[in-house]
Length: 339
Image 1 (tube, helix red, strand yellow):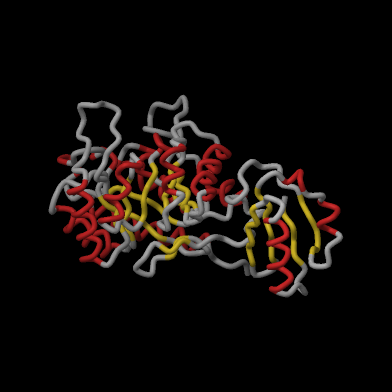
Image 2 (cartoon, one colour):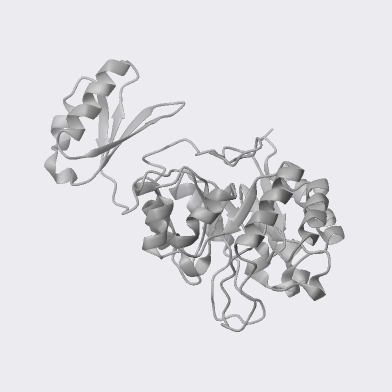
């Protein structure tokens, strides 16, 4: 349930209204947007009579929300959420940022890759230290040492860092190395234990869509994080599993548009994991950009044939530079104001 507050309401009246709701066991989520103030009611709303709410002097109208996700719902928060990732990088609200770097952190070559992706226009450095692999015999990443290298490369290049956390027990290592954005991979999208722990943080969370998750399930995963008190969630469409076998996954550009309609959270696209092949990555990146994504996450490696993981889908720095040029052209086209 949401209550739209009259523009004439004072802050004192609003505070009194919130306290009144909390006294009835409800959590009040106040969103003061550019056009109106919305109070979202979370909890057992059957305890409150909507007609009683509408009779109050400060309430314009009351609307029931049928979707199970509340805090992630645009009805609760009409304006776009902007997530501060550090170093002046704000994701959402009309901005566009690209996260780039190797799938797996391998050593000091990370520093050269970081310099090249930044020079090409990337604003965030991504790299995997803990790797979820299909085979238990495949390389599992450098672990904490990789986080240390990522931190140092980020500091050197003044870029926010992004890395995947797989286990709640590893969160302290991410905090100790001041990783800017903690990524939840597709395999962990519905790991409620991990999501609850991330909800206790004041850190941006990049939440990838599950391998075959519906959009509502994806948004409910975001709700787990937000219900814990962390509203700094960035959604990531990374392709879903379909009957098609010519690509690693199927990039669902529909999901980008739908998620931005249903939710106020920023949405980025991952064309690397969506396609699985270098030859298709740029096309998918352009498609995600045209669909209205707030950014992209792209894998870049100086020598993909020697990469520890996912070299088949990594762009070289030269390919990435060319891709960024084309992405900027598409971005310029889709953001042109109507004449």
